[in-house]
Image 1: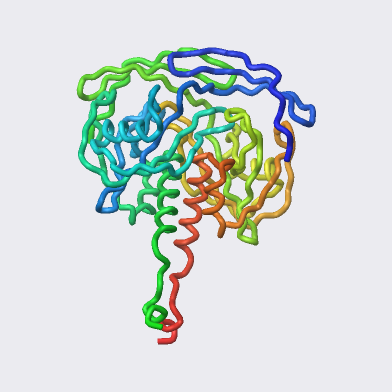
Image 2: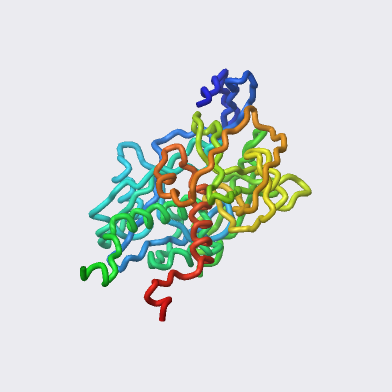
Length: 193
Length: 193
């Protein structure tokens, strides 16, 4: 295991309303020195919600993404507010963005977006046992909610509009969990022994 | 389908060596106006390489991620340089970061990192038929290369160090492709008919 580089200096480079850019002077264990830039993260992180209804459909949302200048398909997500834990934040965002609340919430795993230059962390939360419940969010327009069968994920993953790596990863991870908890397949022949 | 918001104005907010922050004044089709901030992307995009060897192992790299201030496990990746197409860039990055070149390269799909506030696009490239070939990259220290069996992806996806959403997504997509091209399973009983 290589020792972590030594952080020689952190310098605030520039700020905007949303972004905080920091320079990081590093000395690697082999003596090489480098300056990296990164987006500093304040805040408590974010949540992304895989909400699955009784028909085994996942609730997708269609929203405008300023980075791509287009509407995209993705999963409900948002920042954890001060005073909230991740489950509370997930249930609030689900109500704001998809119009549902969940009686069952469980943590799947933490994902990062671009760890080389961003510290942003996102918690994937699986939401089950849904019931209609709407909270007002800060969306400029109502989001379209699209229930998508979990059995048709391979088709979803080929859609150009469903491009967010963390959303594809979140659904893969949940699918993997579901495969694991199902009882092993037993053929009729074996079962009858 | 909702009409896209009208872009009223784009304003350059601030710049650093690596980042370009832009404000975007939008009017949504319902009349609501909002100012969003986003990272502007220059350049030609980036590539992420799923390189699979003859033992059906994917080549992971272990590198320092400044955003997380820690070493992470991820896939080889990098920017497309001027004059390169995505396949050339993928084969160069693979040689720089993993010490292998590929005789077979194919495009899997485009992924985004955080489309709400970043325009960054990443092309996932599947690399097969590998042979040893090393190019000097700009890494401050040699990267550790870790071959990981494709049959053990579920275990990889639980590793805290393998957290990058786009890398998990890339491996899921390749796994899905591999499942698709394999001949359907035929039981002995059916085959003997």
